[in-house]
Length: 327
Image (cartoon, one colour):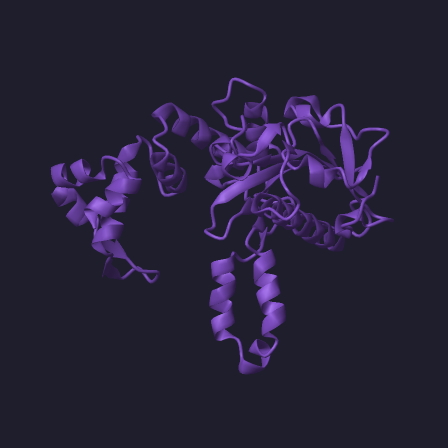
């Protein structure tokens, strides 16, 4: 068990052997009712490892420590992420613009639900299988407290991390502490984040701008230049990018519907996206090019959306749902 843990958590073996009594003590815990219980050895090893990987780990930031320790990040990076979260909380920044989580089930979660469905529902097997195929990639609007926001560059192969020397650090910070900025991510069938878009929402004027769609290197190894590919339409790579884009479309559609329900007097009228380093250029170019770009506060550093924007959604046209060319 320890050797398996060592693969994903370098140093856990030495930690455990050197401090075995402390690891053993970590097995003692309390259940939801405050009664004593024992957690598994694996939980105890991980609990001790995360707690001692960084100084200043508390119950409020142990999720940051857990994610960052897996990536071997420094104490300083942990401190930066911890401080940003604290700043957001001190300023009473809501975790979600919608004030509630919004995500799709992954394919594994969908399969688990399928197990619990009735035989009558399963009789529509063809439709269910088609839906599962679409959900090889699923969307989630990340909570501002999600530690992935701080180091998104590690998952989407971009500069969007708080340690970045480029403008990505401003985007990362905004996704944590700005009340009108939020990340939408796409996960693969294993639940791993592989793509993201950072959205700015102007509530007063009823519009939103997404900086661009970033994409993990794993899904763009045929890339010749930013967002440009030379592959066959029916290739596995092209099909994957189509499914990733569809996940973004479903996420934006779900967001606008939920937001408009909550704000009937000030609905979202339009959503634009930038094209600078957009990794899904081919998909975005199906939509209309904006003739007068929507503005974004300078401090958010949405560089990819400054000069060239495309219209993903317009309330009267509902472009978010369209698949055909909108040139």
